[in-house]
Image (cartoon, rainbow, N blue to C red; front, side):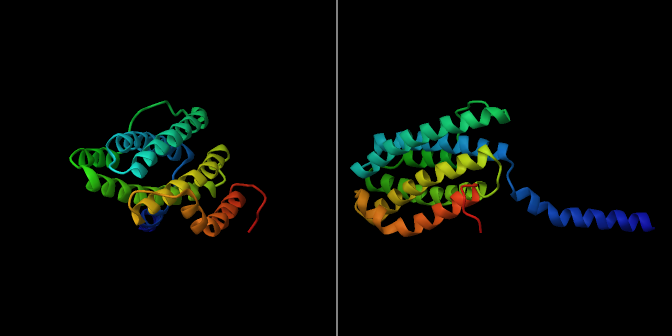
Length: 197
């Protein structure tokens, strides 16, 4: 009877902590998800560069392609140590958005694209900030290095969302400079750049 009680208690304890451990990505999982994310942004950026109504959306699409191509290469460099192989796989969410965007034109296309970019980059920033704080060596350093670019993409998407499809570089930089500097300072510290809490 004691053994069955102990076994039941162990199972309950394991079940209670399972959600906590399931939420934490390993460095390999983070890199794989980052690679799929970069592939997704490249695909969607190409679509926006071609089909965007406003010049701002088309320019943002080209920026996404350039920046995420560079980020993809960095992920692959670090990922080789973790057995990550090059792939062009994109996320299911990106495939679904591509299919929705294929049926849209003009302002509807721009609006759907921009809304997705705002939501997606918010999630990406949270994930990269969390990884930068994990102290996983080269993987956390990669996440910390890529955070400023992700924040820039979010600022551009927000400015496009607020405006008429145009963005002014200084407009979004000045407005968000204070918050970005505070976050960058915390992230550098978390990634081992000298700041200790």
